[in-house]
Image 1 (cartoon, rainbow, N blue to C red):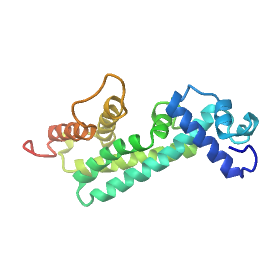
Image 2: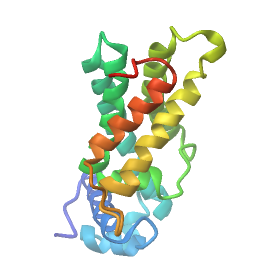
Image 3: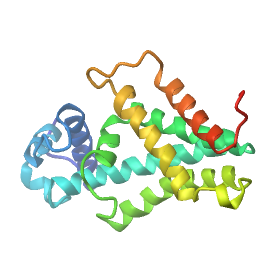
Image 4: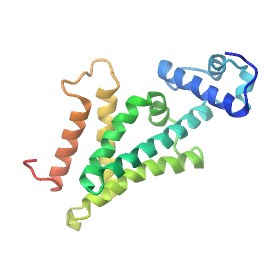
Length: 205
């Protein structure tokens, strides 16, 4: 790759693309900015015109990931309408789909140790993604008697944790954790058990 001729946006994108490849290969802490620069075909000094350090570069990847993730969650929610149950289940499946299609972004978002509050832009887009699942949980649980109704934030956090666990253990090929069932089936069954416990679906469904 040539070291000259980059426009401002092209260089930034080249560095992000290089870092994504390194994250998938070595993890979020397994590479240096110099390695990202070399892979992008630029000098290390060029990196610092765009990012103060590796964490800033990873934070930008996380921000971009959350943008795509939020869009995917919103699309999943909308395709399930007008059924609140279908919308809720669709957002869970969207989590699996995103992790498979965008592994580098997923790692930057959830496994890099970068706080979503590192920048206002990152915090805003992360909250947009979290808000989709909270909205789906609130709609689905609104008919539960108040004394039995979990807060939407708790409800959505439970399903988020379930989705994340399925991804980490079975959807990303972790050694020694092969499941006899497809990750989608595991997630759907887990969500079904949870919803039955809340009385939101019949026990014979």
